[in-house]
Length: 279
Image (cartoon, rainbow, N blue to C red; front, top):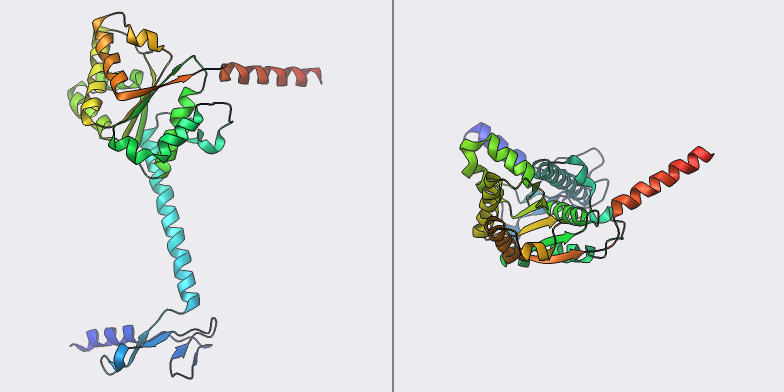
């Protein structure tokens, strides 16, 4: 063994000694701060390179290492979640649409919690939700809460709408198959405001391609729509029929009833402004 390598090995076998450290009754080096050993004997009286002991981690060093590792893990997790949200959301504002910020006014929200809690089953069984009901009843917030909760578990989710999808498909026509394959690669795909896109022949064909590709990928889909189940079960023509049939086969319908939360929020702002003006 060369002198350089030998010196390096010896450095690894000798515990770093601080001025306050001391030798205990067992002959080992002890930490002067936490008073626990910084050395340990080799088992069964063995020795290595003439030494019968090796460095050990005292309590305060172990505590500092664990603290540092925890901080690094938390930062790594935060960076991963932020990256997932940057790539999964088209609107940065919905990063804050979470269970923690839920007002509690949407009675269907328990189904969102259930979906996240049983995600592994939902994924394995390819179970999605079709969130339908009137405008402003909390469908998008429900879907965003699911997306944010899964991303917090480092599960990639893509939330988009068909207006954005059709625009991307038109812009990147040459890479259409790759684009749809990327949508299907996400463990969960969420389509917001389904049925609001333009019903052109090209548009309907691309909508079907995305839905059908997702169906064949055997991965779950969540969709929100202002359409009624009656409209989807009795569509106006064949192109819509095959789209809705696929969607209803993939997703469990969840009806959203109640008042329009957006109108209620707007009314509250109006009342607030009225009081300020009176003052």
